[in-house]
Image (cartoon, rainbow, N blue to C red):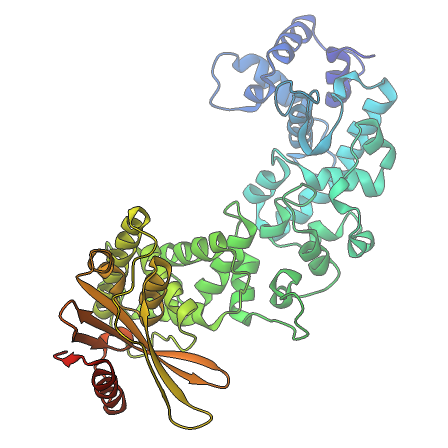
Amino acid sequence: MVDNARFLDVILGHEVAVQFHKERKIQKWRQWGAYRNLLNPEYKNDQQLRGILLADLVQYTPAHPLRNVLMYTILDAKLECWCSMNSSGIEYPNGWGTDASYLTVSEQEALVRETARFLDYALPVLHERFGLDKAVEILCHPCQGLLNYWFMRNAPEVARSVKFMFQPLKGIMSVARVNARMPLKRLPLLLLHNFGTDNCWYEDAAHVCLGGTLRDLPSFQRANSPKRVRISPRAAHILGQMDSCGDYQRDLYRAVCLAVWPDDHTADVVARYYDNAGMGNYNDPFIRELMLFFERNQAELRGARLSHLIDYMENERRNRRDFSLKGRSLAAILRRMEAWHEELGRLKELKFKANSWLSCGIQPFYQAINEQEAYFIKEINTQYDLIEEGRVMRHCVAGYIDGCIEAKHSIWSLSKQIPSGSERLMTIQVNHRKTIVQACGPYNRQPTKQERQLLKNWATFAQLKLDYR
């Protein structure tokens, strides 16, 4: 076992401590777990010690002025526990199973040597690709998976010494062909930050490292679909320039949205909705239609709850395959959304109502036109059927449940029967005086000429009066 002061000497490139007071102070800092403060220019309590440390680090700089500073910062982060003790013991970043300060001298020197080799290669490459600030941010990431992947590929003995197993890569055959330098040279920021951690999407990372494009990432492909899904070149370009917001799938949606209309707030709201809903179809044409609709109405959208609008539109799409935003105004959409919310409120109240009620005693009706076509009118006397009628017909018939329970009126459904199934055509209200007082189709449309004739036939058959609007 090697004490902390000796390990610090290895990091700094020294064989012995330069000054006794420095060694003592560093030991104290190590016990506090506050090494990062020595590299923080805003920390004013010990400027002299910070100056000595930086001077010692910079004089061992073979490739880049920040190389040793970064090496020290990376290894400093690895010395500390990732979290406190739990039932399974102490955890460290990226699956490390031991504190590096407890390694043998040879293992510590190998760890420092491989870290130095990694930085000698990674820092100039990332500096050239993204600039110095972003390169330092990537290399000082708390979950430094790039370094761990370097260990696994170039120095497996170091990975074993810190008990780093890299479990997520098992079973992904394409990753086996990715060497330690490919991620640094080819991955965009979106995948680079989390590479080598549990949050990385390794199929996508391997696809890019092995020469694939961002247009047809494995995440874009749909299960059991032979057709290759490809996003637009503009969306792929935006994806390559984006930084991660913390959720990879949401970032993919954001790139697709920004390619249509470069508005960060709207793209983030749409991406958040689709990600939370788990849609999984990044190439859905409705996303483009939605973003264009918001762009056309951007002046009127100020203060509107975009997530509520999207929720309403997706509900319409689930119930109507031909739903489209073409030719629709924002005011009309908002009115329908408010009516939908009112309907949802009524449906919540229905939980406390009776599940069924007695029939009113009026005879149902059946009329066959030919062998392929027939019409029937039947009473609705359960809560479930009443809610389903309102959902399919897109009106507020569910609010009539109290009158049905109290026998003030009855609700009936006119349907068309064909060989392929049945289709709801109209909802009918009959009051306690056996009078048809309402009849409306989907979205409260007026009855057609044929439907009015069917109502007359039923009224004659069941001895009902006609007084509907």
